[in-house]
Image (cartoon, rainbow over the protein chains, first blue to last red):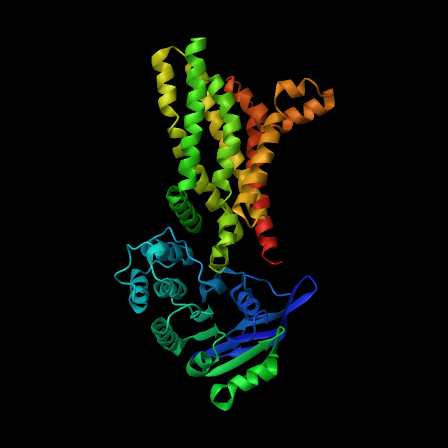
Length: 227
Length: 238
């Protein structure tokens, strides 16, 4: 279980994340919703260790973790917003590079991830020549290398066509089976379709944290809580 | 170490793929060879020292073209968010990138071998002096690279990093020029001489390899990389 307790993050005078508390168990997809600038990405970046929070702590299975530690980062698979990739590399070169940094020597794991993401025939293709959907698969594959226990996806379906969105959503559902999976999105029907739990953030604070099936009108609730 | 080498390998892939490196390297060798061989046949001396003198200024343009993207490009493309979410720390990242740049520069200097061989065919230059010049220019290049990498951590735009590094390196080179030094008060002259990489490099090209010069170059590299890794740690928290 991932526990986030009283996390706050300031950028100068601006409080980007304000006293956030969360508990997320393995096996469910948690959707992080909120308007632009609400603090979703900052919160995700704190969990992955890219940002250091000003206050609060993060626990994994009851133990306090240092988010900048190698051990913590090894248990995390992260797909940042806009899926930044090295376009000059081939898919194989990029995934080998990420695997080396993650310390993944297990070739079977790498092959399994490549198959799972539908990239088996793309190893020698330059990332630059791939469609947005396939680039997203590459980003996802990189996040999945090393079999991470926590997966964090920041707007993974942005800019994809409807077929690609369906493929990525199915993949997300599969991945969540034995992991903590958090993903952020602006698309409310998408959150309703694939998330078991929805968290809405506004101005750095959690304003809603409920099971999806208990939320009657998500659109109305979202507007009420964030406008 | 494995992670540092992974970064080095990736950096080499990116540098060898990028057309900017080839364009600047092509221009560099075109200009330096034209200037050098022009004078060589007029003077009729098999001497490489004019080659090194020109190299200092051309390197002030070439090295920033290589170093500008080392960190700033990662920031511009947001790939460093991905990198720093992986199990790698800022120091490993900086050292890996620097090593990639150093290996790239060693390949680059291999391209000057035809000039060295031509000089040996045309005349009888002193072997020790030629080697000292070659060692000197490699040490100077990798020191410039460390400065460029440091400046690359400050900027989010590679072009800004290029301009700041170029201006800094040209000013530093001018600080070691006798024509300027001779007009300075003694104290200022000493300070400028000692801080000029160019001045110390020219010492080496005369065959005089001082420990103090080597320590100076080593310190520039160490401080450059150390500050780059500190700045990286601080910068992305803001």
